[in-house]
Image (cartoon, rainbow, N blue to C red):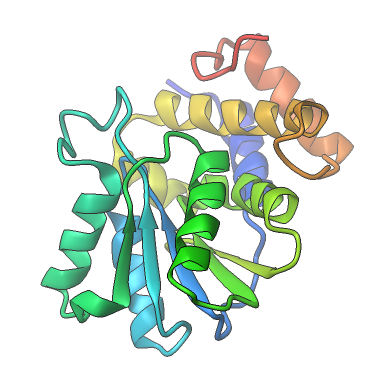
Length: 216
C-alpha cells in the first residue's frame, strides 16, 4: 500500500520529469526504444499530425525487453508504425543502441550517413524519461533544437497502465538519480533539481523505493 505522502512525492517527481514542451514541426521524430510500445504509437501520432516528415526508431534489447521484444525494440517499434500505415521509406531503423546516449549518438550518425540535414529533433520517450532524454540530446547533439514529447497521461493513468505502483515509483526515483550525477559523467547537460523535488526523492529513497537506483 502506497501512503498518501509517498504518492504525492511520486506525482511531484513525475511532473518534474516531464518537460511540458508543446510539440511542433521538427526535422525528424526519434522514438527511443523501451518496454513501452506506446512510444511507437505516440511517434506515429505526431508524424500523422505533421510534426515530422521522417521517423527514426532506435534501440536494441535489454533484460526487461528481450522476452517482450525479441527482435529488438526499434524493430518492433518500426513494425508497429508500418501496421499503423506509415510508409516504410519514412521509418528508419537504428537497432544497436543499448542506452540513451547510444540512442542519440547512433541516430545522429545514421541520419548523417543518410544525408539528411537535421535542424530540430522531436524526441519521444516514456513520460518519466522526457527530461533525461532531453538532457542527453542537448549534451550529445548540441547543434540541434530538441523538443521532448511522450504519451499524454497522468501519473495515475501510467500506474494503472503498468499495474505496479512500486515499480513505477522505483523507476521515477532511478531516473531522477541519474539526472543528478550524469552531468559529471559527461552523459547529460546539467538540469537543476528544485529543492522540493530533491526532498521528495530523499523521502521515497528512505521508504525503500530504490530498486532502480544506479550503483555508483
